[in-house]
Amino acid sequence: MNSTRQEDGAVGADDLAFLFFLTLLNVINFIDRQMLVSLSNWIKPELNLSNFEFGLLVGFVFMFFYAVMGLFMGVIADRVNRTRLIALGLGLWSLLTIISGAAKGFFSLALPRMFIGVGESTLTPASLSLLGDRFPARWHGLVVGIYGMGVSIGLGLSLLIVAQLEPLVGWRGCFYILGGLGVLLAVCMLFLKETPRKQPVDPAKGVFEDLSVGKIIIELRHLLTESPSLMATIMGSTVFALALGASTFDQLWLVQERGFDRNGIAQMTAWIAISAGISGNLVGGIGGDLFLRLTGIGRPYFLAFVMLMLAPLIITCRVIDPSNLWFWVGIFALYFQIGCFYGPAFGTIQVLVSPRKRGMVVGFAVFMIQIFGAALGATTAGLMIDFFARAGVNEPYSITLIIYTLTSLLAVPIFIFAGRRFEQDLQATGKV
Image 1 (cartoon, rainbow, N blue to C red):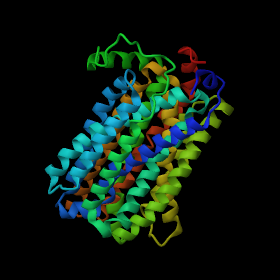
Image 2: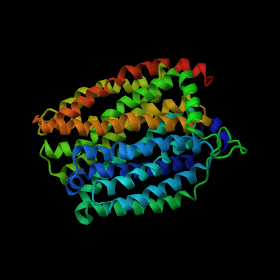
Image 3: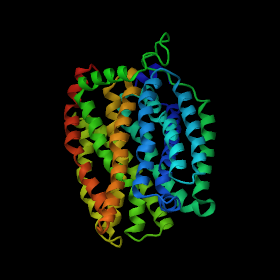
Image 4: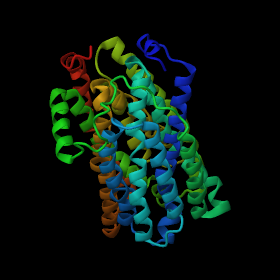
């Protein structure tokens, strides 16, 4: 894409094709990440895992390496050929996914999961850096929302794979097939050209020069102090992600406490996840952009409004019978909210940070969201479910999931502050 067309705000077919290919990779990314969760009703009993061990596998075991390496990958993405970086990461995590299919217990599954996190950590910082350079700022909410569709589509497709493919090839075969597909896409990624940067990389600066935790912390502290809206957006997203982590137990909840067949409910929730997630991505992306243009208030404020509207529906579905229509409305709202999150949150981060530092800040945001949000939520939810079960509490999954939904609402006032502060920070940093 040439710089003139970008400055004019025009978007070409090649730009859209590039966006959709990165979205496809994000779909594969989330199928891979979600496969363990979607297959929980098979893997957990076969490998004799407790809820705490399962929470560790989908939480800290995976997320720690994913998030920590994502912080460094964000800095590296600001310095190297980003398409090749993505290809390398995709190839690595796909090979390790194949290895995961041969797991015999907790530790043999935990080891490849750790390093799958390293591979997957390359994708989002490099992709959002590429998209930030390729599309005009006024479309960042929508562009990130479309890229974020990979989350909802990947989540839904992982459930469809469980429903349709698991009976044919078993849960191990699902990992083998997915890993093979990822290797093929990694080869395709090698042939894509790098997008010209808005702020060129200093050719005299080495890839790993000054790449230290101390230097990253100093730069991040300066950026976050300079922009309270940026800090609040990341903080709110982290709190929001606690409930996302706890939702890894949704399939177990649906089978063990709501009585669904594990294949049947996987297929039903797959279509809900895809339709609700895509709807949420579009509403979050387009709605956040329009809200900003019409009111001058930042996109996080719009996300806070959506969360408040959906919370009663999500809580209701945890306590009523599945024969009630509102149960399914609540399940739809749950996946809709997940889809709605990415456009307003990461679109805000994109705009508030200069292109030269964007990969690093996105990496930091991913680190916070995954470690102190999703990983902490999944692991502590597993502990809580086991505790309630040992104490003889009725429906431990339902109670735990309600607690985490209520906890996530603490993000609402943080997002409201981020939205109201957005315009002031944008002017202070000279981006208006």
